[in-house]
Image (cartoon, rainbow, N blue to C red; front, side, top):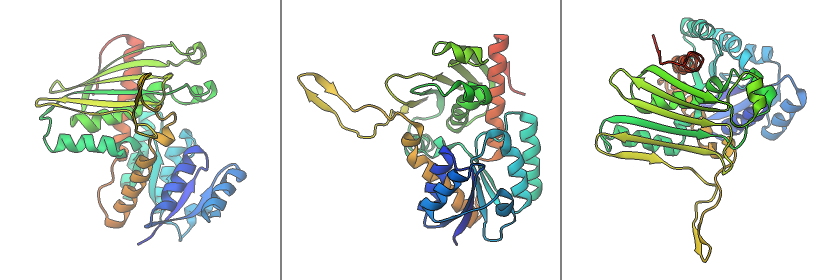
Length: 330
């Protein structure tokens, strides 16, 4: 079976998913839609698909699934539309920035029995998957503490910051999902601190650029998250899991993994400097997982419920910062 795709949104992340779909032997990119015709035409030219309107893709009988890469405030509406149209749906995170709106959207998905996958791509990174496998195989015993470091080389434009929903809902939400993925238990309490250390314009826009979060589960497991909008040395992505019998960690990745030793000492190449190059394999793997679930009828993960859980943690972190206290998750 070849799964036939429509792509909604031809921007930066749309290009990544267009490549992932077109590179999969079990998929075909049939059409692309974008508010900017030139962007859609560029993808159509690169991958041999058609430019269509969203309405045409919604009604199309030659399209089985859609990938939603449009602005965040359109996600929930589009998910509902395509769920009712009988299409399988892959949507970039988040479903929405409002918990109630996400709940309403998931209700439509459930009622229509639509297939929905939320784009938490880091679960599909080969290194992080290997960490999860080491946990599942019992190699470090019971998980006790998770440490996640995620720091960007530089902050996005302030105009983006203003509409992003804030660092917790935009950036840390990936780490909230990874914490849930690795802990194996749901966090029940959140404590967060936040500051503006990188760019005062970010603070003037009502956001933060440097944050720390502590998550706790009912059994006492902990996850610690460190985020910064500045890392002068590259895209810093590390995880470490401490267990009752040992530890497993995933180090930073480099485009070239070599080490040079000479009179100047030991040197290694710089880290990746962009999430698209760091997580190239993850993006391909998540689309492949989505296609396999459509073909075989398997469970889709991350699901809408996973997206909702991560957003709840983000909201709790925002509340913790504002109130200066531990926030319990109901």
